[in-house]
Image (cartoon, rainbow, N blue to C red; front, side):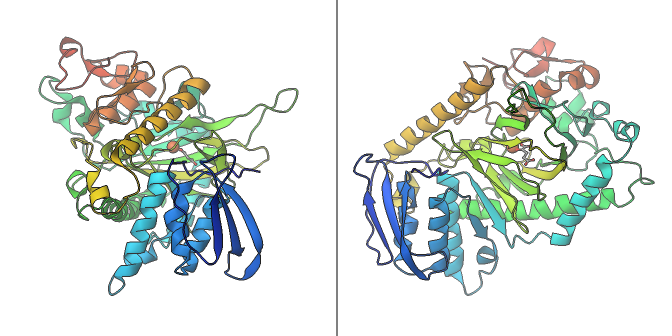
Length: 490
Ligand SMILES: O=C(O)CCC(=O)C(=O)O
Ligand SMILES: [Fe+2]
């Protein structure tokens, strides 16, 4: 039986020498490996465990088994079982005198970003009581009477922030089955941004204040959310630095795009339990349908209910269950763009599960500043420095194509109409969905486009001088062909 795994297959096989495990190519399918582990997860001898895998990319990890690193061993086994791995950020933070552990962390990070695009982090440095508080505040907020919630409706906000009732947001044209509040950096409105579009790019209009529930209802809501965003921003910055190291770059490689004013986004969401079934009881209700995230890094705090799944290259959905004390991390399209497709923005979804419990989650999307221009990097140095010397450059290109094909299949197969987060574009300026969605190297342009496409009514009300075309691209009517301000669709 083939175990589902998130790991992507690759063509070349290397057979490691390792006492604790036997690895050999599958006779039937040359892309498969058969691994027999002699030890269980805790290193105790056990009967041979046979795993057929389709992911030779685990081999560098498997090879590490021979030097006896227990953690790496369990990681390789977890991957073989189709689980998303947990990375321990204490390994990264405690660098002083322990360069080895940081190097190991960074190498694991590279593996997971390259092969999976999903992982958990633990010992991440964000206060765990704060995580509990924000989840409990979420419960309190969504229990408020609907007129109080509607009082901070997103349609009041030129920045597309505030409360969205059930079904208001959609993913790829299908309404999400969740209610949510959207936050961003608490800033003054950039009044200049609302000026002449010939001079000011519309994405500057995304700067502005958040909407908050009345203090009399929930006095600690605002301080908790503000502190959470601050700590998540700091964790994200550490992760960005670790990502730079993992790509063989200087730790500060991404700083210029992030350090001043990253344009992050926080959602506080409630997914009601699944309500309806068809006569066979088989209707699948999505909390959020299949999509990949548009930004750089997404960090997710989820409660104990579950329902998040990520898709592997064979189309199988892999559960990403709640694990206490962790955040789920997945990568967005802008990071995929920046790494020329080397790191993956993996498709994921949230199922509504039957039962009585609502699911609460708090996704944090860490993005560069609005005016950051994201360029694809040259990956040849990964090969020349030996960080990934098993992949010839032409293979990177073909992996990229494979990924692009998969993304199109998933999204065009399951969802046909355009919607938020349905753009799967890897290289700057390319487009997908028959050219309907175009990803731009200027982050702000993409950000505005995503919001405008999802919420054209906000554009009509707060940005009447802009026109939004059928692809969600906005520009002042009289400059609709001026691509230097806001790129228009194909
Ligand atoms: O709430 C979740 O578990 C994930 C939500 C998500 O994927 C998103 O909002 O992009
Ligand atoms: Fe997502």
